[in-house]
Image (cartoon, each protein chain N blue to C red):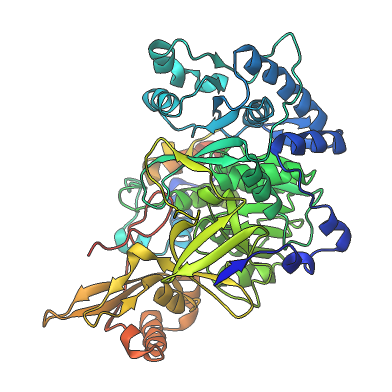
Length: 85
Length: 503
């Protein structure tokens, strides 16, 4: 079943909060414009965590992607959407 | 009092046959010749779908060794190695060292100006650079055309055999911020490096014929010595992870038995395992070596539940990696273990001083000296040793807080007591001014989300109660007067260390 962008973003938000609970305090509302480094304050370990979690949760492979190229949650959603297509 | 490490202290943790296998080659040239012969047909390194046996690596290194010699580099000449984590690095490092030269290991993230600057600063006679990094040699080629640039594929028509060196000869120069944070090179002898390689074997049940996965930079002693060289020394196979992003995929396909990790990555693997309900480190993982930052006891215990031994250790670039390792992390929580053989240590006003075979010969590229006239190296770390000889790192000398009453307080030592609560991820004790202007001790903490969730309806309130309770049990001079639970993580350095509040 093809997930829509809203569902992907919801699942992604859940992953992010598991990676770093304090992200919610820094950024109470997460949407596609949320910036991963500036708004969520992600560290290098949290970035790695997010990449691995996306692969596990969405059953996709990101081996041809550099996660550091993802600037916003929208970038991540589009990537997941493309990978799942 | 001087504490001296001994091999005997580690004997009981390993089978007699395995323990007898930890032999002293004296220098890296002899070590490599013995290993290349003893394990010839075994796979030595796997990287990006390619693999090479010990014999294959030996023959590749021999070709490049010839090219290094043909470039006019002989005994004790300095040759830089500029390669990312790859088989190229292994080949280049072995070729340079077995040519009798001193390998100057340059971090691959340096830019072209810095590569040139380092070659000048360290008096480099030639450079071996990976094909992909050649643009970083452009400044060098223009400014110093007399310094030849080779690639790991370079080979001479004439084979050159492994040079004979003595233990005291220089082996490698590694980058370090040292105890003062100023960038420089630490020159390590063959004796120091081989001691560091052997130290990786003590106190661990299964040592030889393992499957190692490398996720640390080879330009750091923890990656180079404890990971790569100990893997080669033990006839193990090393899979070099191409990118940390592939770490868990590589674990699933390669099924490593040993992993050398920094605590932040070890904790991430644990969190992922919980989240997805399976052991992300794979069913074959038995041993995790954890260091380069303080290892929380929580990690030791959680890994133990997965059937994995997590061994905390302590070391520096200046000590050719490991000074000590804790073979009993469950019985000796918080300890970085027993000193390894040929390591002497003493405590001077609480500061840890080191001397021994593994210690650096000198700093290069700086006038700085960190040791005393009788060769004691001052680490800048505060430590204590318990009645069984186990070492504990309790803080840094420069982090000492001197209170109004002249009491010296080590914040790290106090923090460790609060960090014992599983719900505390990290903490910082610092000196603050109270409303009346008097100096007080204050504590800030960040909660560990997964554990805090178990604390009921008011996790912050419950955690605060637990923290005040611990505080109450401290001696009066060490009690904090204020406790705050932070909503955000502390500011962190690139190596994930907390950036301490400036006083």
